[in-house]
Amino acid sequence: MADAISILGGSAGQGTVVCVFCGSSSGTSPAHLAAARSLAETLHRHLVSLVYGGGTVGLMGEIAKTLVSLSGPNAVHGVIPKALIEYEQSGRGSGDKPESINEKIYGRTTIVSDMHARKHMMAQEVVNGGPGSGFVALPGGYGTMEELMEVITWNQLGIHKRGIVVFNVEGYYDGLLKWLREAVAAGFISEGNSGILVEARDAAGCMRELREYKVAEGRYNLDWESK
Image 1 (tube, rainbow, N blue to C red):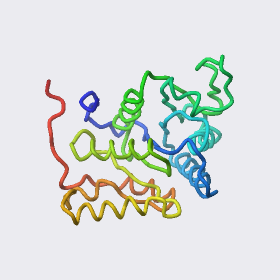
Image 2: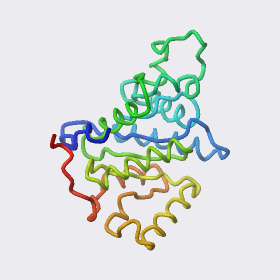
Image 3: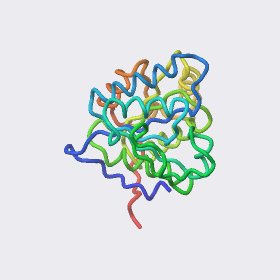
């Protein structure tokens, strides 16, 4: 899938797009939902568009509906595989069609065939976005971690050069950041690639880290466009 993503970044005239990976659950701490709302408010203040996994529950639903309420439906694009609709979207009967998703609440939604198509579409929108576009991970589970690790790997391999930030709410990602340091010390991640993933402790920090993101010195300059 990676070789189908154009590595050419967007132009200065294009709007900034942030892809947010996060859970379809709300978590046990109120701080998680609060962080999702805060990130949406910050995206609104900076006129940034959101692309995300298309869920209407948990942190997914919170960030989407908050940004739509502030910036309007055009500011949000949800991308969800058909098979996940019943798990990641609420308020839908068994006979409801995808077109019945209320765009006035959650923004535009695209139904795709599988997880690969979902991740490809989200990543392509970020790559095509203007300066400051990138990826942010709020707290989440297996799916959030898998999505995060994939865009980190694509950055290391030279498939894209967008910023990648973990929004470390109440120390949620402390364990991941500790593992990263240990992987560098153990020789499995080079020191030159240790900065691919950066940390922010609040929503303003997420935007700052994306704006100021510097491509890691150890990133591989591989040719992914040759046929």
